[in-house]
Length: 435
Ligand SMILES: NC(=O)c1ccc[n+]([C@@H]2O[C@H](COP(=O)([O-])OP(=O)(O)OC[C@H]3O[C@@H](n4cnc5c(N)ncnc54)[C@H](O)[C@@H]3O)[C@@H](O)[C@H]2O)c1
Image 1: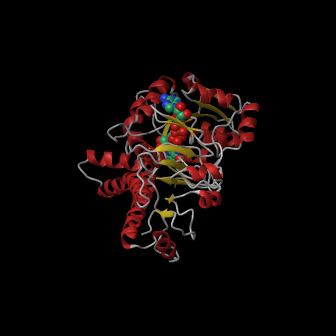
Image 2 (image 1 turned 180 degrees about the vertical axis):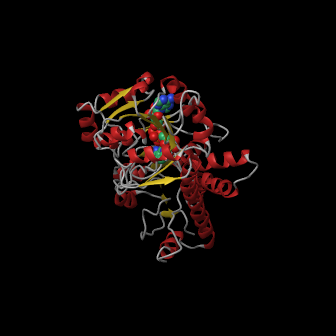
Image 3 (image 1 turned 90 degrees about the vertical axis):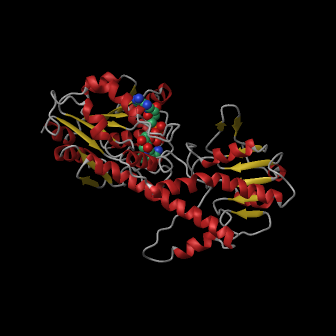
């Protein structure tokens, strides 16, 4: 088969549509494996950055991107017609929720509308964007004209969920097993063969729906277990027990327990969103996904819970949120990354602003936060005198490179939502999950 040969001799031409947190690392892995990659995006800034060899994804090594571009192995464009010469095309565009918290698959639709006339024989199309079970078959397959193509013989369609975990020092695209399911067995096989050249292990599943569901199970599992940890934290506050100590001790059980931590709420483009793709699909089938609903309620209420902790702690000092000077430490949705999408810090800041607080924030990775009506810039550095001037400092994101000793020693009052001050007690610390 012609495509097998092209994979073997690295002449297969690859396109990655959507050069974000998922697409760019994927493109780089193919370049590292010896393939030529075309990156396609609609964002001119990203296209120019890539073509200038300027990296904007923290998990990618700057020099690797630069070398890829300098050696002409990676090019970026917004010209979708170039797909006509491509053998393997990967779709890695956003799949957010709309205002009603329903799936917004318009980005996938837009890509398909733009590439449909350039689909050709001996082409493999793989969707990587997280989506509801059935998307590949119900939404993408109809674009592939079945009069013109014979699926599994001269056109191949698959779903393979991206499992990248930004900021994870141990696992990246290449050493995280890849799951793939095709419309036919031949589709799965050809997709798996290509992935085998960039990842250590490929797991083939029986259908595109199975592969789609795998991703949703993984992230629903996380959302629900984080929801449980958050509810246990609230219970512990009421019981006067330290939830962090409880979880650490429970995690010594060598079987049957997996450690999840409470926090100020869910963030990122996956965990708060993906379960809603599943519940939306199930609603269409007259089934209510109750676990998802409950976890979502608990998790989305965590910023309000943090607000209550701040309010109560200020109240104990005869102060109110209204008029207090408050420093937020960390606004990225998780530690050591530069992404604020769905970050609970933004909700907490918004609630504080609505309550009349005067807020500053410090995040070494996020220079600016734009609330449309208000734009706030990160403090450049943490200084003793400045820290002392705040009525309260709230640790929302526990970045590694923050001087917590300085914060501990000079803040009047600290709300710690991440247990970053583990083992440190004092009347000026209020910890989430501790009575
Ligand atoms: N970020 C993660 O940690 C992560 C992990 C696993 C899976 N995912 C999933 O991967 C998908 C992509 O997520 P991401 O974090 O990379 O998003 P992103 O926003 O970082 O990147 C998406 C890119 O797609 C581009 N784009 C938007 N519309 C386009 C179009 N019509 N044509 C071409 N390009 C277009 C955007 O300009 C952007 O560069 C989502 O479905 C997400 O759920 C994300």
